Amino acid sequence: MQKEVLKVNCHLSLLMAAVLLLSILLAGCASQQLHPSSLPVATVNIEKLSDDDIVRVKGMLEKLTPMLEARRSQQTLATLTFDELYAPLTTDEQQFLRQFQNLNGSELGVKIPFRGMATGKEELVVLKGQRVKDLEKGGTKEVPPQFLPKNVYLRYGDMMAAMQKDLGKRLYVESGYRSSAYQLYLFIFYLSNHLYSIRETARFVALPGYSEHGSPQHQAIDFINEESLGEETAKEFDAQPEFAWLIKNAAKFCFVMSYPKDGKEGITYEPWHWRQEQTLGPACKLSPP
Ligand SMILES: [Zn+2]
Image (tube, rainbow, N blue to C red; front, top):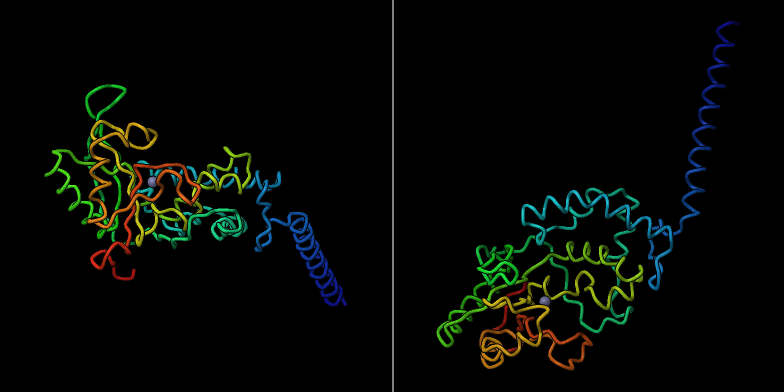
């Protein structure tokens, strides 16, 4: 009899444990339902993130910062892969971030075309030791290491050899390749500058897959000259002999200026930003990635 009571007690405790577990699970589900943005479907408000989503973005950035800082100091941020970006995050945060990865530019009024995702695993060449004028301290300073897909690096080298021959000057790579995962991070990072409006942020920061800096088939280079004229100095840059040389000769090396004055993409004039273009002639065709 004693045994039977024990058994019953045991059954009861098992039953109670099961009920307890079920109620915990149900409570968990209920709280999930209160946060619709945790669902895997695209639920973010593109005009302005909800307060909960803003908290999530801040939480994610905090979690990602140590990894990003480590990559920055190793100077390998530009080759960050999606797996590496997602690794420090919870499943819920990963699902949330994936919504940003999958944003469709045309639905946000982005006029530049989708260029494809840059995985960070392409055959890349790293450029180190580029020195330009230090405008603050005098002397020269080193441009942080930049990456280029190998085929673009070779064409850039040919183009600079020709420029050097004609002008006795050359241009340096201020900004080359960056992976789509890093681009995704940048997009999330800059949301706060645009009051957490995805639509507004997309006017200033490329969505992953839309940046020509992460497009091995249309790879762009931001040039800087030895006087440190480049990005942020559009007027000065386009008055330089190097710029006039590019206008005349870059197409021979399969480079084209992406954002000229009054361009149809609605992007401000960027005389320093030139991309590879395969349609400039048979020699410009690249083999598929
Ligand atoms: Zn650029």
